[in-house]
Length: 91
Ligand SMILES: [Zn+2]
Image (cartoon, rainbow, N blue to C red; front, side, top):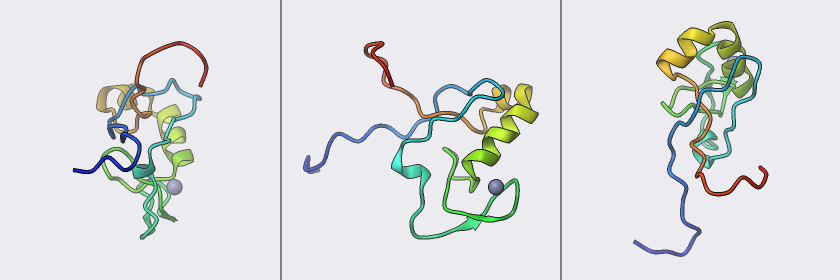
């Protein structure tokens, strides 16, 4: 283990955004720079990945949450990154 880079944030799902709100996907693991795969929702190639390694465009995931708000909350299929809770400054 070396500590040459900044402490990596855990790649964990946090809260499911409310319908119409945007996902916060800042973790580098959401972006696969090596390979595009067909989006689970629109079938177009995407480098984006959900927390479950499901290929999906962020906008498609957001649209899916808006269209399936109950399922989205129950399944946690697409969620924002877990935010380290420290102070309420601003994002
Ligand atoms: Zn898509």
